[in-house]
Image (cartoon, protein in one colour):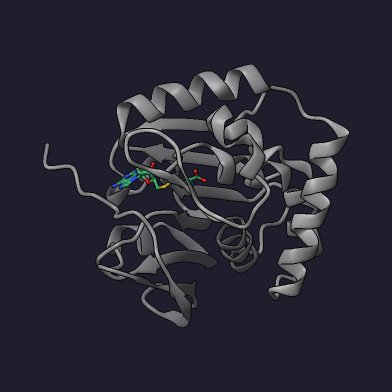
Length: 213
Ligand code: SAH
């Protein structure tokens, strides 16, 4: 599969739709216009890649809906050079959006097949996260902390304390919290022990699973 003018046209339309749905950050919209979402999906879904829908990838996981990706990314307020930790690499689409915003991206995935497949894809496409790690995102990545931003792309039953503790002062954690459906939650670190918390609407994600080993 290739990226063509037709795909670019569809991405422009998708960006217009996201604007109509309330996304206003120009850098985020430009990242949506730039990243060829169809290449992150199975070729049988190519015709649907620029609809605002989630789609199955492998290992019973999904590529998040473009609106959700844009909404979470907007909340992160990424500046060039920011250190961002992503939990749930999945297809790598959100990773690529963060890279388009010139972030230094650290990403963690717990499904081995997906981890392998997506890392081969990153190499092929020339996407270069600082680190792409196979492991359990509940622990975060203490050896690379603190982060300017942490984004969780799976539904967490509750907010892991380890992730909050790995934020810089002023850093942001964007995490969908809940069991069946999730409340998008933004935490901003205001002091060593204090966080400003905002709840921003209901979404539905695949679950964030804990590794027992
Ligand atoms: N950002 C992805 C979304 C994939 S769905 C994309 O744009 O395609 C969520 C992903 O989180 C799945 O791939 C799932 O395997 C992964 N996941 C679930 N629990 C996890 C955990 N504890 N640590 C790391 N990844 C996890």
